[in-house]
Length: 95
Picture 1 (cartoon, rainbow, N blue to C red):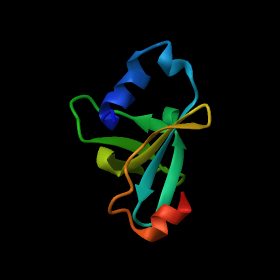
Picture 2: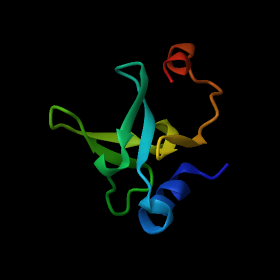
Picture 3: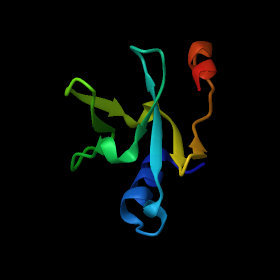
Picture 4: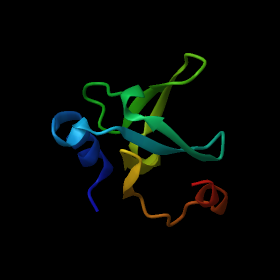
């Protein structure tokens, strides 16, 4: 399996591959479920190899570690899925 940071870089820098409509599904501890967000809502800070930033509906900037990404979709099709080992049942069901 390709590491998620390599896939995210390909989406960002490979013009042909990145031309699709991408969504990221990340584990939200507060909501206790997987949240799907458009890739266009993600902000990458230069030099940060461990997380991305996301503005929530209230305008707060959230820092999401890459290890919480569980799924990546391209044009509505699941193209990457982190193994569910260790994922709590309540989160596995919400996918």
